[in-house]
Image (tube, rainbow, N blue to C red):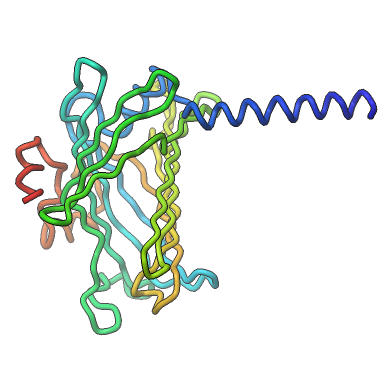
Length: 260
């Protein structure tokens, strides 16, 4: 083996070890944690909005089945003495006919279950080794459930940009399930580029639109400052049919009512 080959092997081994350590640690430090909190839920209790557009296509195949429009909103509820932050959020996404733009109310003659989440309550805490601890609670009554993040959120630096990634995979008894991949890109505070943060979602799951086959969803979201800054196309729907989704839950009392 020549000198170049030995050096290449040593470099590859070093990169493998570094990558493995990075994946285990999660990539967070205090600065990255604060950037995550500020961009994800804000720091002053005021609402943070992310407007979303996207598509649903056959998988495989790529036939366009529907366009997506929606919003994800959140606020910081409180920060504990140990650094744990508490987040209140809600989100909604509607499907639109790709030809007419009309909201798809029925699929196969049955009411279409739009993706509405009246609340999600989340906690986040920075661990000692760069990992992020916490979990998410959603649902009401017997359907209320908790999901532990268990290190499922990772942080990376790409130059001055902070990138946060989260994977969510589900398996059901009927052999269906879903795979979600979130990528959250946050620019530095001194950047003059707008929007300052964007979020992409990649999702493969089963939906009635797919007629028994999996579908592929891709969604792009970006931060806006106020509800009034959302496009009129979405505000018109919310104001007329879903006024709850004008702002995130205000406090734990509201969340507890929604859990009943």
